[in-house]
Image (tube, rainbow, N blue to C red; front, side):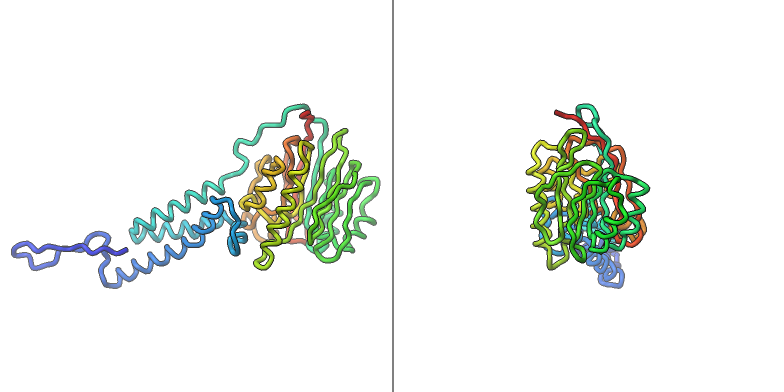
Length: 348
């Protein structure tokens, strides 16, 4: 706020004492200074609210869940607010902006720091895992080409329409992927798990968009597989988004000590409390975090990098180490596919 500096007149001094260094006075300079203060304050309102929810481990209500997905980009308005506060010498606003920048910066620091240690026990199998959201089946042909080129051992497919299911049945050799768990549905609801390893049926998550599950036999070990595709947190579906992520959390907790892979389009980032709940409940780790690729954007694919956010994940139990993680551009979808190279360790 503006402060007035009272002047004194000495004997024979007919001039008012000059205004203090932070008093712009009532003229145009004072108006600009007050305008700058309002501008900086307004810029800080949204970042402050969102980062406060992040610190409180809550996703709150709209628009917080949507803005948490882009938490790193809130550094921009906070930085502009700090510059405006510095220019106007607004010390309270400087402190506010600096605090918001510091807390936001703490939360957006690289996730992968200090996570290079491998699980105990020897590696018994190498497993490549691919997850891809095909956007209403639009990237089906690109997926088929990717499978032929990369030959992953496990494939998690979201938004696989009836045409996509038919293309997988006709275009993917049973010799390459003899084991499949396919849920046929229209629009974005269809999903599929393809595997080079024997699969046994397992109860999936009851949801609007299909989230099937299976148990894979890999090197003599039973590995729980769960495809993730909860509803997106659009303003009128935040409660459903939170509920379905909660069901995934319960599913992750039910795996117990068994090796597990949960992969797909989570419509959530590690800045969402509901997503972190899944990690904690299942003792899971994000493979991109282990591979040093945290915060690499996967959606929307059309934005130039580093714009966007990472909502496509491959989560693994502590039985797995990660050799690499790569995001692949598939024509026909607004998501980038994620291919991770894993090693399964015998930690028994």
